[in-house]
Image 1 (cartoon, rainbow, N blue to C red):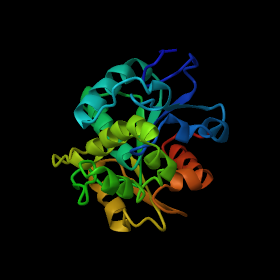
Image 2 (cartoon, one colour):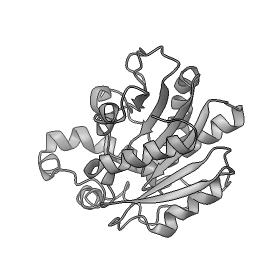
Image 3 (cartoon, one colour):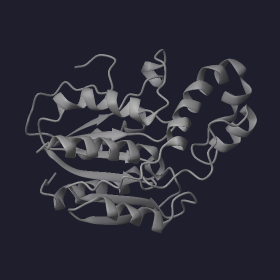
Image 4 (cartoon, rainbow, N blue to C red):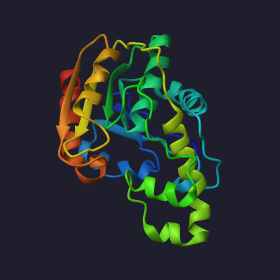
Length: 249
């Protein structure tokens, strides 16, 4: 097990499929806490533990896509030695894509598929950035996405702890845009919330341009954070996607 790194694995079973998961801005590894039990023993769920979040709260948070992807990819390489998938929600979908491009370039033979959930395609800029707004407006902007509890904002001690991490996350999300349109040689699954005001059906369909191996999209009941409110439906689609790409679980 890598201590205090991005991923915590203790399994040496090469028969297991690995699922690397990347959270939305403001979220941490704990949003995937139920996934292991729901997916069963055939899959090893490995959520990313970001700096500044949860048990890494003392680490300086990362605010640029390049730094985050560089650090994660370095740690992922020795773990990508058996069949694996990448799953990301919101900005996590774009982190997953950038990692996919790295694996594509290096010709990793174990990379099986990419799952993008409630995320804009890489060449679509954020049209309403919030990361550099004054505190009050920034807090209001957060509530469009993750319903940050008001007590965190009202308690200045708590706000001083969480505000730098949230700003770093949203700076990463709000300033990212990659217009190179590099296609990958694995299939992509796109997921969208049926009541998501931030991501349209057309937005999800844009991901079809980024694969040479087939794209499909599915609707999940819920708003932008349907990954929190409707994980069972999300994981049904994850299982179906793995089955279609050759991994029955």
